[in-house]
Length: 266
Image (cartoon, rainbow, N blue to C red; front, side, top):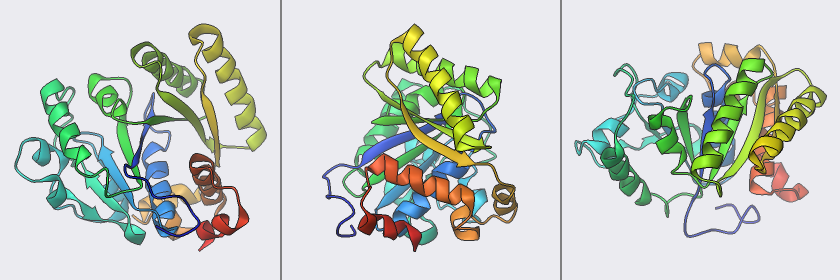
């Protein structure tokens, strides 16, 4: 751990990064958050938990030795399935092209959760990149987290689907901390206006307190980095979207002082 960044803890904080709908940039945000935090000295594990449709290995061009599916089935240990990622981060892949698993079942989920506990003391942050939507498979992974980060964009459908996720979380696990990140933002002002409206509806109908972690600027360079299989943090580390992601990282971890902030600009 880099001195001055944070106090080491005995257990990693687990974040679920999810969305009510696909196509909002959830996986890109999870990957780039993981990279910049790892570069800053944090021990970061990113779990690509989109069963059968995982794509972090595709976005990085890195082959994984084993998958979550193999760990759950007992064909590999969770330690054997860990893969080295960019800038010292570690990731665990669900595997792609295996066919979507709609429901792993409680027994298999409990098996994976037991395996995950083995890693909690080895990392400072664990990000679980779930599938999109509110299927049982997605929700089971979400409930493994300490805090849920819901990614939405400015489209009305994303707004409605994000609300559905907050509603489900509120009904099933009222104490769960929930934060919102708005992606593909045209301006900070527009994103703040959307969050205020979203927050008002959540408070009125669900009586739930949610957090606003910030917005990420819309930029065609994001799709360029995906096409080249180079994470944005490495492809265009000083681009507006990456500046937004750095601010969100500092917000999540409570890093405000100038000395610590410089670690994110290496």
